[in-house]
Length: 301
Length: 301
Image (cartoon, rainbow over all chains, first blue to last red; front, side):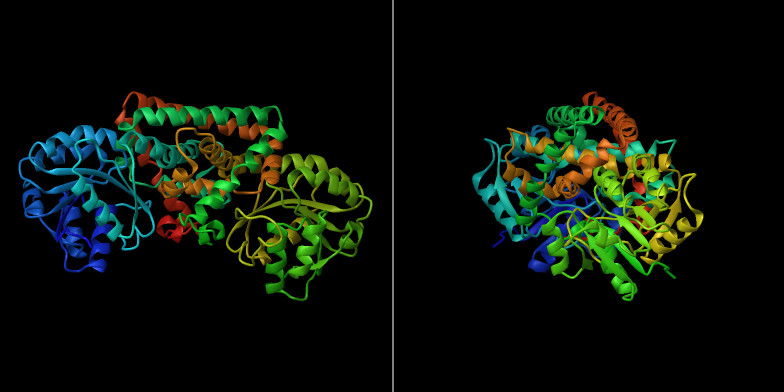
């Protein structure tokens, strides 16, 4: 099914380690090579046997048919500058960044100009954990991978990469980079920023102690802390690279929040009730689509 | 341990049904009687055998040593007006409302004036589900119950009620109603309002379709939909009855959100990184205190 027999993963965090573990389960004959610029990470990846780990980028990508860039968004350009000098023509290269437009602008030309075939993609899967120990084989199962080809994208490489993500258990969808960035601003980036904000508010209060927050967090707050425990560097880079979409969504969010704040101030129960009533159906849709568990409290209690 | 031999629960939703199921497990000799003003709910509670279900309030509280008011905050006053005429002097009465100051103002005098002993309490436990089928026996285990006595509160009744919640598996804490309302505004009410807002934003977008939202929700948004699936009437009443604390916390929230929005606009990566870095420790504290699972994605995947 999957034509890539030797695959390199660059940046050995949650996504790269999950790719390795999933591929080893699906097809142990695929050769997997990894690289991370951090020696501690490389040693750890080697120790837990994720893949063959090389201590320089050149060796890590040599002879690979597919190179997957799993570094934070802000490091894509630097990695590609180095790859440009070493990749063999015909190699397929993808990235797994959570923003697409800015990455494409930064790296597409560099790769295509030396004969590489670049296909931007985004496997939408993750947890709040990061690092080489965070991966697991089931991460991609049933989740969606969005591919955002441009005019330059090689059709055959696009098909092969789509097949690759399906081989990992994902469903795939093709859309424009612009639309991807807007969709993700709504379903992922804004929720993260809001969760970080809520946790930041709490961190800053003088009137309520930390231990009170912790003890009584089961009433709602604890959900926000999981999201806000995600990798800070990864999220900084996302917010620096999808500005327009974020500011648009946050503008809408503030508008809505103010309307609810006004209803609270005016004691407008009818407005609040109507608002709260219309939000249940989307939850049902998410559970029905297999994108979340329907068990109360996510089944964690 | 628990001195109440006959207990009435009024309002047969998630909390009342969990109380019944937990008590039946801990001590099957306790007599449990329930009432709900909604006939459909009463019939359902009867059918699933939660407790003895009476079709009028008088019969439901007759001879009980403890009456637990589990109706939405906005209905506490009306129920108490009726109870006032029928409760026997010496009966202990508590409520489980998520705001305390406004409930105390509304019902304490009515109960105390006819010889009832009122102890305000708030078991901090729940799920996004509501109704008589939502309850389960483990809901209170390890969670906290806050008791907020006033100058009028009978000390012995307070002790007995504290023992009662501990008997259900809870840890207890005494604080003033004012402080309770502020703590809960932060740990529960604001997170709920913000989750409702985020889901409302999505519900209103023209540029991203519902099925896109649903399919790509695993990247963060889905967490918000669980909280925003909570009972609309219960939450309307909470927001109508803890105004000052809510407006204070929401003001802080907006301030923080604007500071992050400005950092995004100015591409201030240092500010974003620092902000995102300080939020991990509170998550660790919550997991260490047993108030959440430490398994990635709440263990749901």
